[in-house]
Amino acid sequence: MADSVYRNSVSSYTCPRQAALEREMFFRRGPINIGLGCLLPNPGDWMTHDYTGVPILLTRRPDGALSASLNVCRHRGARVAEGCGSGAGSFSCPYHGWTYGLDGTLIARPDERSFTGLDRATAGLRALPVVEKYGMVWVCSTPGPTLDVDGLLGGLSADFAAYGFDTFHHYETRVLQRRINWKLAVDTFLESYHIGALHYDTISPLYYTNRSTFDGFGHNLRWILPLRTIGELRGLPEDQWDLIGQTIVVYLLFPSTVLVMAQDHLQT
Image 1 (tube, one colour):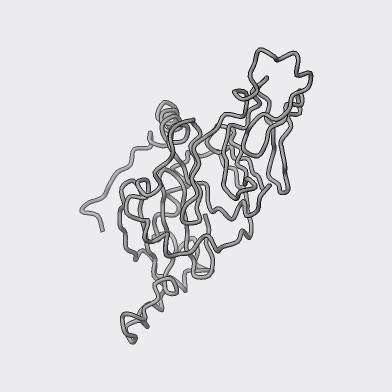
Image 2 (tube, rainbow, N blue to C red):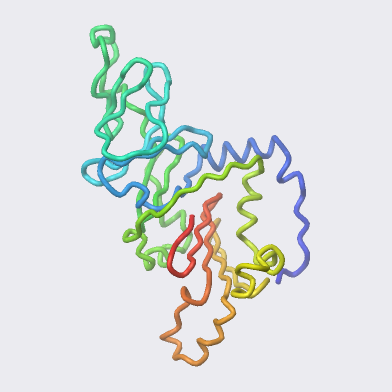
């Protein structure tokens, strides 16, 4: 329990100026975790990402590494890809046909003689910082230096190194669009007080309502919600305790990525 009740100003969710500042500082300048690397398991796999407000293209190169770039043709600004897919060898702009490799380099443009004054080597897609570590992917929607993932995790590296996310496979993606402030979506996952009422007929019989533990890790957090069967661990030696089997472990990776370890699967 907190020392006292905390009153959260409604303006934190409704002020247009604050929302604009958060969007600029957190989502356009700062690094974000977009999920697991298994979203792009094979060379030639690609996906677009637009949730920062900046169009991003992520690709798996033939050498297995990830590339990220602005999903913006360097000629007239059209998007060079839509959605996601596999088996790509290049991307061609639908407007004038400029073609880019999986690493973003410009490999062809119609009527090359018209652009002799523009070096092809400098006209590739604008590269963005991207790092894949612990089976997870971080990207920044503004060009800049390489990301320090361990520094971003603020002490959570050991947790994620142990999970083996690099062995996971992607099961399903669902997109839900709501006209709400981004913090409302995050708030939903950071308390179990609602379980007894909202989830009365589903998971309420399985989990304790409003009983949990919390630890902060820099700008991130770890929140653990116990099953009602967790007391069974008292009958086992402590070195046999299985936290994953008796809890849901929730991580918030700043600013807005929520990871939910739910026994046999992960939701992000």
